[in-house]
Image (tube, rainbow, N blue to C red; front, side, top):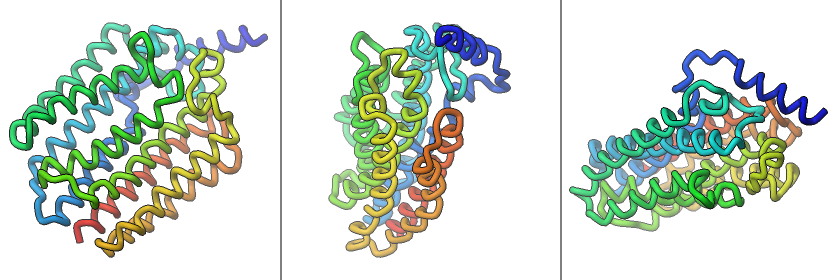
Length: 303
């Protein structure tokens, strides 16, 4: 019976109509994870009177290209491994038969190349050591589900997201403008990283059954559904509350608390026990809360 159900769900994924498959494969719901650190990092740069807008734009290109690249790379790697065959989330390009593995791999490499070109321009004006940092970011993006030992399969995805889409992306955006690393920039990166982690946690919460069957030992699989829900709630609430320490030096940072009503929507859904397809809109709601927090925090830092 289980085998029949899996085959049926696999066929359902492959037959689902997708209007814009490459856009779907780029996973727009996750894009706030790349936009928010650039907004907040630029807000911190404004706080020091050092904002350089063309550098902020290039930082945004780097962040979004890396986000799209890691999404395509994840699609490719999971597809060729066969771990995306049974899904309850949005269709994937390789597993859904919407694109060949080679085409998806090329798309990932092209996105990384765009990030590399923009990153080189920033390195030329802010320090060539940024090239090494960019190489580490690309390697981490590919190794999440790619390579012989993908760390996303052993429960380290959340740590990587916190580091790269929180600490590195936020402080990096600020640094290429201020050319200094400050306490304010680091503190501002913490809520950004936690909300990025929350996006991954709710995604992995939804995928626990399929990941378990595929042998993916994500943190959600290791913790189990109940503890994963508590972890998600803790990440979201702590992210919002961490704007308070920032108010010591930048009082308007308290504007970030205005994201709480938006955060309550996905929090209630997760706390109520939503699972499977019911968690798909929760991912979008988490992204909206993340974006609202980022916008309000960036404004608060800049004022």
